[in-house]
Image 1 (cartoon, rainbow, N blue to C red):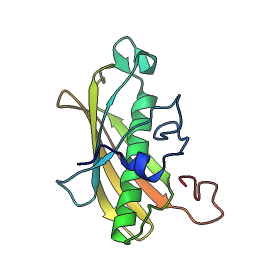
Image 2: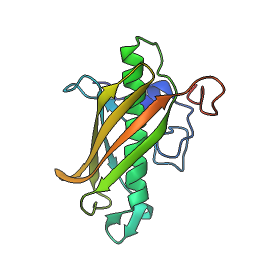
Image 3: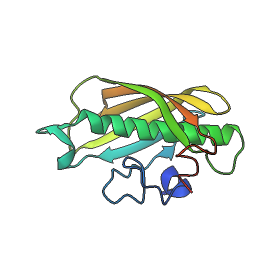
Image 4: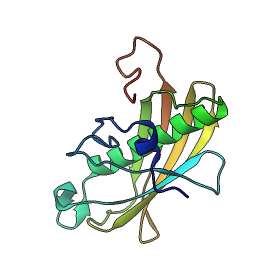
Length: 158
């Protein structure tokens, strides 16, 4: 397994708040391929004090951002691999939903796993789960779509 995330490999100059390696003020998540499913990623993340909603618990917006960005990359990598592309297409979130199942502890290692549940040529539905100490804290599902030339996000990763 490589130590370089899909974000660092394919979008090192991205400024996205959630996943952009070049955004020094952002979350800078790092997602890696899973070996146990055909199209899925895995990541770990430790929140910081400023990510709290109240003492000791992570803000729901931060949880949403983690799931959204990780799910988006899951879709992009799956579309790239299934279409035998050299680079992932720029994908955007068409919709996503999350269920906050229990309070998520702050400043502890969180694990997020994702898996594509429906893959088409230019879009993917992705299921995401967030765990803290093996407890399911949040789950989500999203539709992520590859954009075409003319869309503001087109070539945003290059």
